[in-house]
Length: 248
Image (cartoon, rainbow, N blue to C red; front, side, top):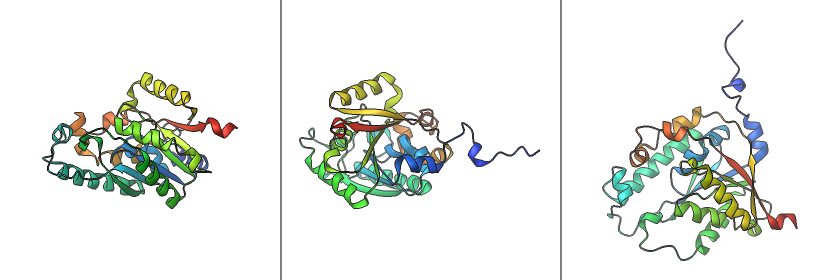
């Protein structure tokens, strides 16, 4: 008897691409920064080649020579070097996963001189992007810990009335989801606003994700890692987001 197993009988019995396609349909994933979609959804992207990944914070600050503490920790000498390098890392990772990259050219929060005062431009830009690509589903960060993640999540989850027919999902922001309490508190805050998360049960093969994660080596330096293994220790989590108005 042959000891070889069919691909569908991989470790953990991963769900088939057809099941993922049935749940999500055509999928647009919104990523606050260059690494977030692959760190948080890489296994799903691997199972569904052809997805669109929209990265929000991709712009260079006016003073491209500025050096933030985070960029310095990642081994860079300026914001220009950091953002150019991260863009190349992201392109490499998304190419490996067969995903389409779209960059929206908003500033990373670390380059802002003062807190953001308006979400209107980001909301309009995201809405126009959704209208352009017409996905069946939009996958948002849940919005954990990092101000940029919370902002992107809050904006996306406020667009339900303005994007009729779209299925809204959220993903757990890796590595910020390492605290289960943080995840539950965020879900509770969203529920107070009339947005309720229903867990989506998926078992996904992480082999393709593992290869893509390794592209983001500059991020490993900032996080104090030597490779992508600490990222891969986190299980991807997803929720179907329902708004109270949908039930009326």
